[in-house]
Length: 453
Ligand SMILES: *[C@@H]1O[C@H](CO)[C@@H](O)[C@H](O)[C@H]1NC(C)=O
Ligand SMILES: *[C@@H]1O[C@H](CO)[C@@H](O)[C@H](O)[C@H]1NC(C)=O
Ligand SMILES: *[C@@H]1O[C@H](CO)[C@@H](O)[C@H](O)[C@H]1NC(C)=O
Ligand SMILES: *[C@@H]1O[C@H](CO)[C@@H](O)[C@H](O)[C@H]1NC(C)=O
Ligand SMILES: *[C@@H]1O[C@H](CO)[C@@H](O)[C@H](O)[C@H]1NC(C)=O
Ligand SMILES: *[C@@H]1O[C@H](CO)[C@@H](O)[C@H](O)[C@H]1NC(C)=O
Image (cartoon, rainbow, N blue to C red):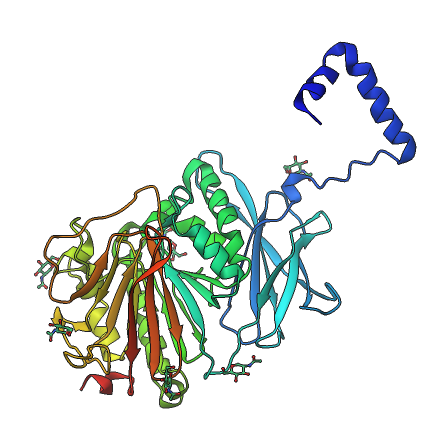
């Protein structure tokens, strides 16, 4: 209806004819306004792999209490012939309004690996749109594809459009968001968090969206992060691990080294957990099945940026630990080295940087000709340039000798774990309309600490 006509209708003189019009409709059908109340309408739908075979967790938000239901079916089958029920928790934001969100979680189990499913979530008080996902193929010879990035905000999310399209056409099996969401989720009484979770639904409702906390999540002891995501394990998504293809992926919090007010003990708790997890992953039968050990944490140990961040210091807390705590807190470089971690993924710096294999500030190329073929130390990738209101970071003019490639373009990284020996990485530039600006083949015939010798 043209705007002019509408406004004419509403000017008193014509109100009578409007009512007449409505009245006419009501003769035809009973007047029932069954639009679901917005408070009960599911939103911010996202999925994650719970680290339990054949399952997937669906997470969403409502603003009033409702049931937590998912109706789903195999792609092409009878729509919604399967049902699962979960639970909701009340997340009270720490802001002045103390806004309450109901966070719903439903675990779908007994999924058939490699099969596509369609689903919607909600309750009789309101249902989401229809989404779809593919249950993870659990073969250790499967070759999963990932998009990796960090530091993506509600404002200026440069990589979002490309990631939406590439996810929806099936280019990725999982997303790794390496900390720093929304800028910041707690802002405006957590409305920025809501807005961001709505923005990423176009990715995160279709493939497992796996996360780790960053410094921008620090408000109220990381409560928006801990409550909104549903990562494996029982640490409120702070540290956990999971298996996919021939990779064992470990996600952890670098932030325990920086927000001591939330508990120095968290450094030690996490460290002990990491050690146990790495020990388990290195048991011969496990390392044989899943030879790649990949870590993701927000703040890097190394970087050649020109800010004063932890990674610009030789005495990086993440790398070497802290000696101003009681007792002194161990860093992570040595731990990861001793358990033969292959690849370490980071963000925080709003740039992309690839390092030569490095340990203790020294480069350990496989060979000068082929540095990434049987390297003698872990490889680090820093990918924190998906775009946020803080824009870019800069580099020091002369990179250190462990720095192999750097770019200040907005973008993200693609990774494919091909088989037990081959892993491929490439960097996409949004500034250059999706051009691949860097790529490496990472080849390891041996994994584990013995590979360093
Ligand atoms: C939602 O919850 C609020 C606060 O409890 C209540 O006032 C309102 O009536 C509820 N709305 C619906 C549609 O249930
Ligand atoms: C899982 O991946 C393996 C290795 O690529 C493949 O042989 C197998 O057919 C896949 N399974 C399913 C159910 O797609
Ligand atoms: C912060 O949250 C962590 C994880 O839930 C918890 O272990 C810790 O005790 C909390 N710290 C404070 C000061 O509340
Ligand atoms: C303790 O840490 C400071 C700064 O992080 C560093 O300069 C110093 O060398 C460290 N001391 C020891 C004994 O490791
Ligand atoms: C590592 O390999 C790269 C690429 O060949 C080379 O530029 C660099 O100098 C090497 N570093 C060392 C320490 O051998
Ligand atoms: C692993 O994948 C690479 C790249 O596709 C291939 O060249 C290599 O032969 C594969 N290795 C095995 C053991 O399948």
